[in-house]
Length: 304
Length: 47
Image (cartoon, rainbow over all chains, first blue to last red; front, side, top):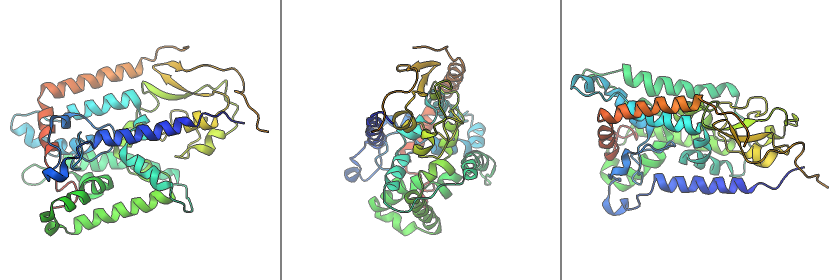
């Protein structure tokens, strides 16, 4: 038994597509031969979207945070206080408002992975223990290494962007090399390493659902910290839940929503709410208030 | 709508808004804009 509410996933796909175009709305780059340099780039991109992408209109919070942290000593020595509060504040405002709704609804790289997963192939699950790795990437590659591993000029490196980020390779590395031929002479091991990571993530995304988001993404890890307490969140009505486990079967990130509501792994795609639960046990909680109607007992419908 | 106002997200929003405003007052948006306007070759695996 189920209700026909599958339209929500179509809406989500549309919203994801709109966000891709909002965050990458500068289509004049083939003419200018350069990336967008306008004032919108002072706005924080909600999802992981490289600001070196020629079409990018906003800044990537993970990239900018690393840039500020790696030069924090230099900033302080020169009388500036660029310690990342603006970027962290922006990320926190987004996280405290929406948690990982952003991953499910507004992240370009998440959307790309979802499209890749639609390619027919044998599908594999991801061991839950790997979910913890993304917190390591956030802590080590985004914060600790850029902040503490500095050269003689007191400058660090953007470790995550430089050595890992496949979104940057896809959205900026490849397009910029195509756009600026002179860059091709500078390609070396670093570029090959990033291309190899990108190819690995692409193949992994075909056979597993959103592997980058679940195991690597530092921005997803940051938003995950807010998932249980964000202003807008998915919640469970324990009285209405019958433990039918329908929500387990549709979850793209393999969580058991009725057992772990508010899990940091949940990308809030709302599939469980709109396609699985027949008892209105899963609902949108906005600042403590249930959005939508409350229904007592099984929702309708028996399948003949 | 039934429910009880959750204060935790509001407190967090207040905290991060203060952090954001502190960044604005220190001129950090200018620095962020400078960085975002230029291609970070190192960031995209070149150089």
